[in-house]
Structure formats: structure tokens, C-alpha cells
Image (cartoon, rainbow, N blue to C red; front, side, top):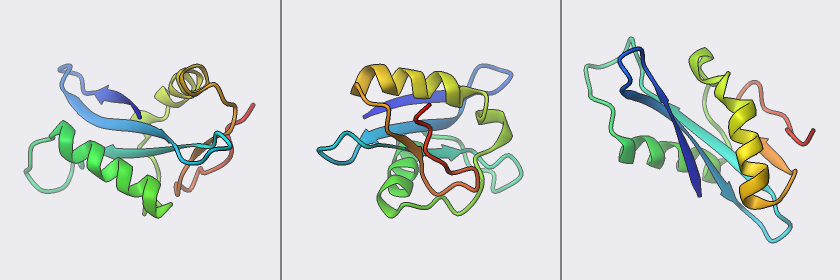
Length: 103
């Protein structure tokens, strides 16, 4: 499993991308979690964010779209996943922008 945290303007973490290899054929799934800026007044914790992102991988859905502030991280994170897991089969799970990112 590898993680990449997004950070707010103050440099504090406010989201995470998590990638895990899910089968022997080399498929890698990416889940995400982001602090809800307009939601409850609850502090961001890395442990909870990783747990949520991993649940999205296991369940295969994200119940939403990856936040705009995290989208610029995807190409860099997917390249990192290709190198780390040595595969081109990388999928962002459950998002409305879900697609195989194998190019």
C-alpha cells in the first residue's frame, strides 16, 4: 500500500490517495478520502482518512467524485504506482471519473 496526502494552503494534510494491489495479475486500485471543508467541525486524522480510502477500494465505490483539489495529484500518483507496483493496470475506484488509467 502506498499513500499520498494532499495539503491545504497552511501545509496541513486534508486528504489522501491510497493505492493497493488487489490481485495476482497486478491490478492496482486507488481509493481516496478528503476532509469535508463544509461539513462537521472535525479534525482531519491520517488514520481515519486511510481507513476510508481503503474501504472505498474494498467496496469498489466512492459515493462521490474525487475533489477538485486532489485531481492534479492523480497523474503523479499513478506514475508512482506504476513504478512501485510494476504494473500499468491502475484504476481509480468508484469515482464518477472512474476509468482505467493504463496509458
